[in-house]
Image (cartoon, rainbow, N blue to C red; front, side, top):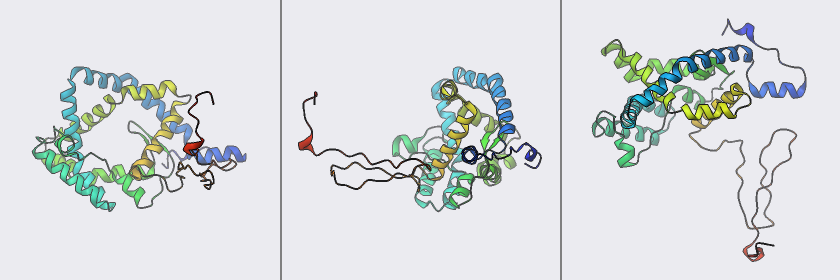
Length: 275
């Protein structure tokens, strides 16, 4: 970060431009875009073709089994972060999933917990834990190979590497190639499952870099809140009362508030399609 500090762009003086600059929260944008282009070239020249070959060479049932085993091996780390976040119910689900899939799921290759019991998978990491604890994300960062991040999530990634029980077991008690093989398989599994999605995002984006930045932030914010609505987001409701008060949805400065939708009483709704 010290070496890249010289790449920080100077905040604009125009008020509108400064507002957009602050909203982007990307003072290293020029440097980040350079890393993004390097990552993109690496992906298109090597990683995407290998991920495509992985998907073509292995039958779907085998790819699903590898996917399930990788998620099961991550469960102890997810459990630690569930507990650190005080999510006891989710921690119980994670522990139950790990126990069921490791035994009845044949080492995790079958997702017995979800397919039979209905316990769905959820992911957690230490970056999310820091977010729950109130740490702000900081500036947007594009990491080589890894991709979008920020100081909070980068610290979380490093901490996860030190506290992951399965990773530590592989490092100290497994063969030398085991941690690397797990990392490569995880990356291949993720990339192969998102080939069409990323292609569509790129095809429909005016600015692919800015779109990826926005999607990353939205996804991380949703993961930290476990899918719950944001505290600063108004929730509109539908009411049949024409005198019901308007629900004000927070908007950006300068925009008019949006009223909540209302439905007319049933007796006022005509069944004639021409009316």
